[in-house]
Each structure stands twice: as structure tokens, then as C-alpha cells.
Image (tube, rainbow, N blue to C red):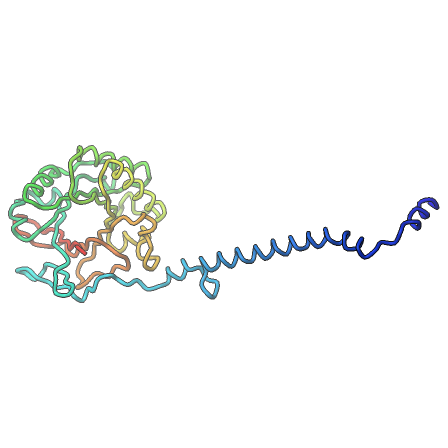
Length: 303
């Protein structure tokens, strides 16, 4: 012990320069810590600038609370035609819409030349459906006749499929069935995905929103892979299940990657949807020359 003590006491006292040399590594380490902390603060601040408001709330959250504003002035709608039941939208005195119908085998034998002469510019034809009880796939009995007749009369033609899919697999099955029926036919307009709840005991009534979005996405992707464009059809209830109108100006359009929408709402002077749409189905009791039954009427926005 004594020898150790003497070794310690015999050392020269450190000079101020030695102090500096000993302290320098500690100062460098401390500086590195401070710089790292400042960098973290700056990164957090930049992140907040990108995604937060002044009060720290997410900008995405703020956008979702903003009221929806339609790009159209629906006070400029007029009801024209012989019976005053044809919706026409104006902007600055110019017409910015046209008239269309959607049909199925239930509309009977259609005189498409008479339909065209009655001011109808486009038509969506049901190609097939899945049953809402047993779930069997069926082709529309008149889909080829209607597709051919509408095109020959000079109408722009699209198609739709009535879905009752409850899984992604069933959605893909429906899409493959439709593509097979179309058999590489050229369409002017998209293929519409039409998934509705059925009053009573529809097999797909209890599909939750997240699953329904996945079903719609799967159907559309499969149809698009075959070379067709797609759009989403539904009334307020259907579109709400898909997330449309729940997120301010964005909503379900983001969920389904911006695919256009076809909104159904009857008995109103102007649509009340809280999201953008391309087509408004405003009546299911329309009258059109060449069709003996009531028919669905649609307004398509051209601008």
C-alpha cells in the first residue's frame, strides 16, 4: 500500500495545458450530444410543419373536417323536356351536361334508334349479376342485344355489373365473369361496380365498410387489367359504406384511388352528395321513347 501511495504522490501536478488536453475529449463528446439533440428538434419541427397546423393538429385531420364544396353550381340546374323531367346543368348560359340511361333485361325490348332520337346520348347496360340470396352468377338476358343496339344507334355505351360479393375472391370471380361476357368488346364508357344492400335478406347486407372497399378495389383492378376503365356506383348509403363523403373533400376517393363515381339520388331538385361525382342518376321512373317501361335517368357532367 505504501509503495502505491508514494507513486501517486510523486507524480507532477497537472498544468493548465494538461487540464485542457484532458477536458477536450469530454467537451467534444458533450458537443456531439448537443448537436444531435438540436438535429432531432429540427427534424421534428420540419415534420410538424409538413403535417401539423399551428396548434399541432394534423393537416390531414384538419382537411377532413372542412366542409365539402362542390365544383358545380347546382342552382343552375334546369328541368326540361316535354314532361319537365330531364335534368340539365348550365354554367354561364352554356349546357355542361348530357342525358343518359341505364338498362337491363327488365326494360324489355328497346328501340335504340327511338332512344337516340329522344335526346339520350349514352347508356349503361347491365351485363350480369350475382344473386342476392344464393349468390349464383347470371348473364343479363339482353346484354348483347342492348350493347349492340345502343352502339348502332350512335350512343356512347358502358356496362355495369350488379355485385353481391362478400369476399375479395367473389369480387374477382364477378370481374372475370363480366370480362368473359364482354369478350374483348370495345366500350366507350367505363364498367360500373354496383354493390347494393337489399331490403330484407341480401347475402351481402352485413359486409362491413373495410371489406366492401377491398371488394370494390379487387373487382375494379381485375376489370382494369382486362383493359377497361371502371367507376363506382351507389346511393348515399352505399357510398357511405365505401367511405365517400366521410372525409371532407377527399373521403372515399382516396380509398379507391380516385376512380370516378356514379351517384344515385331520386326525388330531389339537386344532388346532396358530399363528394365529387361524374354521373348523377336522378330518377328511376323516367320516360324515354323506344322503351315501354320506366327507366333510370342520368345526368353526366361534361366539364
